[in-house]
Structure formats: C-alpha cells, structure tokens
Length: 89
Image 1 (spheres, rainbow, N blue to C red):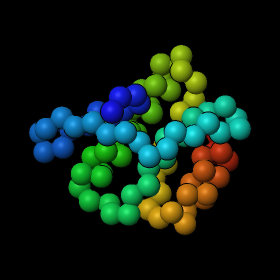
Image 2: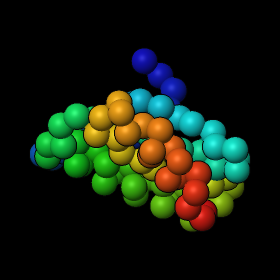
Image 3: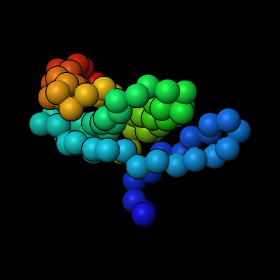
C-alpha cells in the first residue's frame, strides 16, 4: 500500500501506518482522523507521531493547515470532525 503514511517508532522498531481518514474541512484545513477502540501503548506511539507530523507540517507552512483527531468509537466521529472544524488553526 502506498500513499499518505505516518512513520513512528515503537519499542525501537520503525513502523508506518495509514490513517483511517483524511478529511478536508470547509475551512480548507485538513483533518487526519484515527478511529481506534483500544488505546494501547502502540496506539499512543502512533498518536504521538501524528501530533509531531501535524506540528511539523504546520510549521513548514507550505501544505496548508493540518489537524489531528482521535475517535474512540464510530459514534463520536462526527464530534471529532466538528471539534476540528470549530477550533482555530
């Protein structure tokens, strides 16, 4: 599988993952949304890498505004999108 991926390190090993959703918000910002039922140590490493990636790409400034969101249930996906859309860049 190719395309958009986030590189992270877990237990000293380099991994990559493909986010569940890339959402373009009405504001033009992008939301990287992960849906994960279990928040184990490896998931936390993924989220930390995602947060670092979002900070770095926003600091660069050449790729628009990016945000990250974590959904712990399919029932809160809408709320995560609304939160991302409502908060300032």
